[in-house]
Image 1 (cartoon, rainbow over the protein chains, first blue to last red):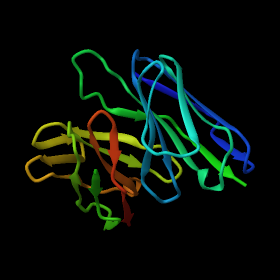
Image 2: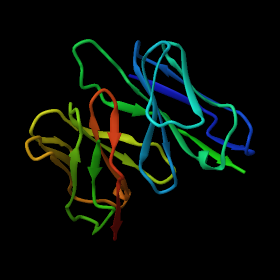
Image 3: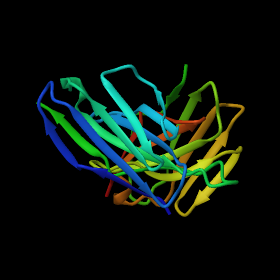
Length: 116
Length: 107
């Protein structure tokens, strides 16, 4: 079964500082990987998704970027954080096991980011 | 564009049955999923409907009607621990989530 590692669990950063959140996946190969953000009491907003190494699709234009340097590694970055970047960041994975197109999407435990 | 609509909040008592509806408008559709999220936690997968009809998993069931662009999550024999937010999500190549329904179960 898939295991999704996200760290850190919580992070407090000043406005204007850079950001790097890492997500790694075990138990699957060539997964689809996703970054979501959730504001307090709100739904999940899809930020980026990747169907393979070096392939990134951006859903929402903003000061965030994503990279996938390895098959099971997905990184969310920013050069300069804004106050509005505060939120709960979740990495998700969907395995692409052959013949199982309807694999469910699973989430990591998330990083709670506060910008001061 | 893509949109999913769910009620914002539902309340019920222990032992009751609750149905959370979801209507969607999306450009692509490969199925409807349901997720549960407790306060402070990450969403966890509950069920998936790729075809019309009812899927049952223990106390939880999920239904889909593709012709009506409609689905629901049915929770039976409610327990206090079922208090959480429930999200429907439509899958094409990515998962698009509804705004969530907050369920509060009272004793």
